[in-house]
Amino acid sequence: MFVLKYDMAHDSPTFSPLYRQIRSLILRGLESGEWRPGEAIPSESELALRFNVSQGTVRKAIDEMAAENLLVRRQGKGTYVATHADPRSLFRFLRLVPEQGALSAPVSVPLECWRAKAGQEVARVLGIEAGAPVIVLRRVLKFSGKPVVVDEIYLPGDVFQGLTLELLKEHQGSLYSFFETRFGVRMIRAEERLRAVAADRASADLLGVREGSPLLSVERVAYTYGDRAVEWRRGLYCTAEHYYHNELI
Image 1 (cartoon, one colour):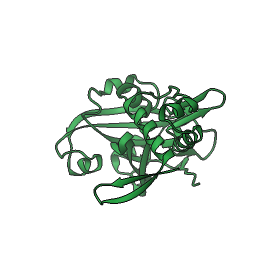
Image 2 (cartoon, rainbow, N blue to C red; image 1 turned 30 degrees about the vertical axis):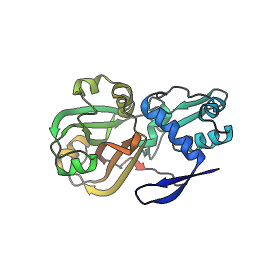
Image 3 (cartoon, rainbow, N blue to C red; image 1 turned 60 degrees about the horizontal axis):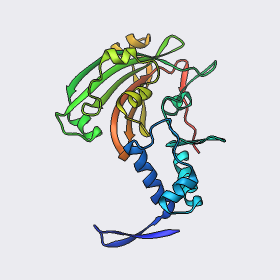
Image 4 (tube, one colour; image 1 turned 180 degrees about the vertical axis):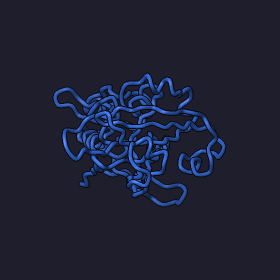
């Protein structure tokens, strides 16, 4: 079913599938906190009654949101809001795989956390004003006790007020699960750019490699609901024993 909508800015009709409109309404509920990460959403029949549409229309909207990792279907239990606290979500945003041995969760070692004013580049990436407060943190990710990743992360200060090095050190689990539970910020998608670089002295010391060794530079911008950029991350990956894995479908 299609519903005719008008784009007032261009005075021309546009068509929006009804299930996409239902998807937008469900997404609005997620963004407002009506259904929080890890919680079950109403059944398809309940949502169909709420939105006055067929159950099939609701199912199609939920199927699309599940494919986007916004919702998770659990056989015999219902549909839940996706959460970074789920261990299965860890490697959705971290694509490092060991050359040998089983895949294991990394340990995050926070090094620094401080407040600063956004420069032109940070402001552009995060969509904030130059000079606006940002929080900068640096950390090392260790796999099986070995340092593999050095991250420098920029966050909008108004979103992550109160973030300190002490809080980061106290948290057990992924950084994104910490952002979700402590600050109510859920990362729902990210864009990355990769290139090969040579290790400078500081990164070489942290990763235990020689200066000039080849590293993989991974620059990421992560977005929350409303397609708002809430993290700019620049990571240096040591790929001596790991490789970057991405499945294309």
